[in-house]
Picture 1: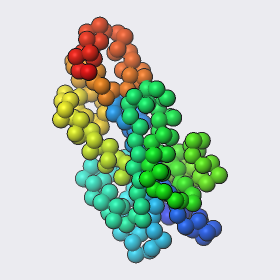
Picture 2 (picture 1 turned 45 degrees about the vertical axis):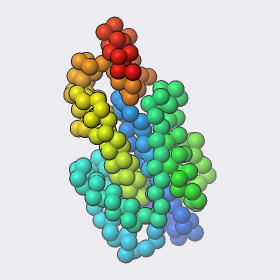
Picture 3 (picture 1 turned 180 degrees about the vertical axis):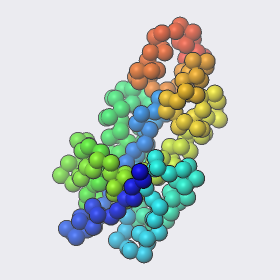
Length: 221
């Protein structure tokens, strides 16, 4: 069932005197490869402009074409947008949860001044907990977070399309680096690239299970 996000959370905070609200979300947390990307979006208190965001929802509920169109609209309407990422090497070094928080902090640095955060999911302890509202399924229910979800997804998908040209055979242009059958088949045939997250169990298992894959890693690096 598709859920249309609203401005309920934003209106509550605007009425409490909080003007600069950041919706923040990430994409790529469960992928086998490439970085995790976070986007932070501040929407205006302008009913006419906000009305232009009809159709924005959780990026997973949208087609690729719809996401691209809506990402442009969000960029036109938003007061400010910040995008940040954490690399596969950082994910392997500090774990995916901490790397997600790092990507969020980088996105927020690009936003600059803000008064309150609207975060998808559970509270993020690395961010300011005193100025943070965590919303389970926030990308479904909160428009600011849904906007961030769309922007982050389009940014990361663009990266995956570029990487797919350099590393054909994994289907990254289709699966965005997630563990689909096509991606797993590519791993079995071609081995691991420098962009794979070696701390993730499926990649780690390949690394130690097959000496030929170890050779493939060395060749591709």
